[in-house]
Length: 236
Image (cartoon, rainbow, N blue to C red; front, side, top):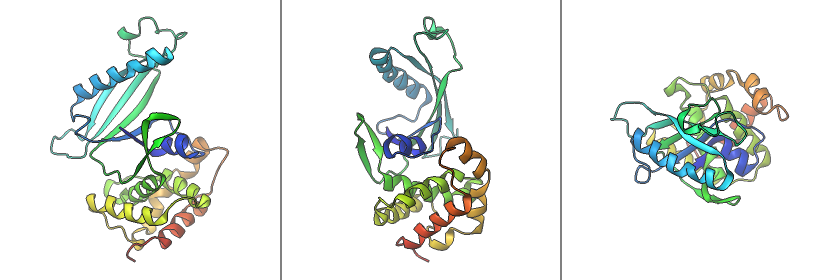
């Protein structure tokens, strides 16, 4: 599985924003599109935590979205419960469903254009910064299609535009590839007023919660996104 999303930015690329969930992309050749098998594989892998860290962990919930077998790029919503040695249910953990859990999302067959090893943990592969930024730009454009609001993508993109330590040519190339498979028009004019309005929903409240020491006003963050888009090799 390839680590991506907000916490990949946090842990691998020093983002100031933290989230609770962990996001991964997996190839269906490696991870089967089957709830029972995914649960079995995760439970087997989580035994590593017991052996190395003396933390008990297990897969408590697995749900495929959408349920239709016709969907070729499903997402699995998963909850991994855990207990530390001093916790109430540590000794009979196998018999309990615990409230201490970590939400995990695994996307199958999503396009990943570029990865790199995460130096802190050799076994973990993380999407490159350019791949994640391209993914976030695509997610902003998908707001209309999915009828969603993606405030976090504006904040995250702004964070790295300020640092300016990424390859913009790669971002443009990856955005084009990711947009094609989702049948999205990735043009400069696609980042229009509706995209802006959707991304602004709950922005201030959520940023103050997830990045209280690094607040960026929405207008400033959106302007950073648009300044990046203008420099990318995209159709007008």
